[in-house]
Image (cartoon, rainbow, N blue to C red; front, side):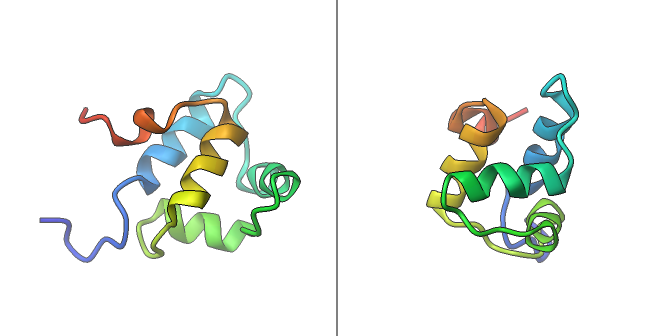
Length: 78
């Protein structure tokens, strides 16, 4: 069903970065996550967004905080 994807929220994180009004780069997101004590660099974010890396619940919550979105945004069917 998911064709080798390691997560289902990655593409939605990418969409949220572009929709946030300020077009947050992966590097900017990584910096915001550092302030929340979550250590994800640009490479890890890229792998998450492409579905190549699994993501923890803690990382999901932190990414949502950093982007100003709700967790349900990433899990709602579209």
